[in-house]
Image 1 (cartoon, rainbow, N blue to C red):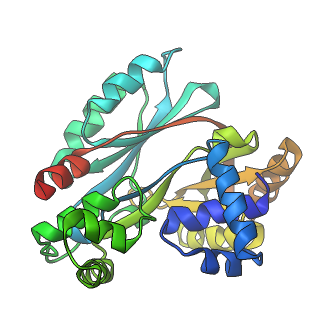
Image 2 (image 1 turned 180 degrees about the horizontal axis):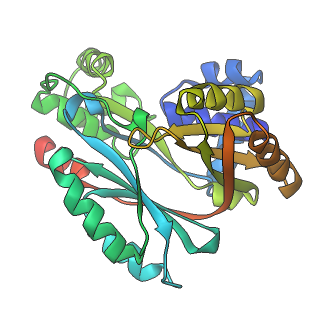
Length: 300
């Protein structure tokens, strides 16, 4: 996966319904070239699905949380099975040194204490750290009211977010105009989430998660903004801990270890950065949660 392939994945992670013309403009290629590249990413297993789910506008008070730490377990299969049965966990990332990142989606704040207690037991993390990314939580004063047809439309797009509105309309016996109008309104209210199932491990490139600590919390935003601007797309995501203003995470991609070490070394030398630890991406697993169960129930 080269830089263009990575950029396409990042654009589709943000919105998997982005039309090929817009994708082509972003990466400065022809539409046919983009189509060919995305097919190649699918064939290699790097992209394993275009999915639609309920967005945060339809889930007032929902909270994303990250529990991470070194696991004492050598085999992850049993961990995956148990986490799959936990309807609050949507993603598991494993990295070097048997270090795990368990991503949870909670219905509200009242679920946090139970989740923080149960996940370390399941995953064998004896010294868990809780990370509440500032961008993970959006509070909505009022729930977006969706109709039964809205839920049916989302369900129809659930396993193929790029499906045409005319196909959805035919399946649900609605007019294409109605589907388009309902989708537009849900998008405006942040009630839809379009993304992809992304497996960068199949690219044979190097994905690193940098753990950072700053000496002055007020400098953290500037440091992260500078790193993303300077190294994009090699630095493709940054996360700030709302519960610890001194901590941050940086997701990095590189075609070789030398480039990865260079990025880490440069960020480490940045003023006010006290500490950087790199963990190399090993595997990823996605799970259905209560959000998917809610959609199934509402869609009938």
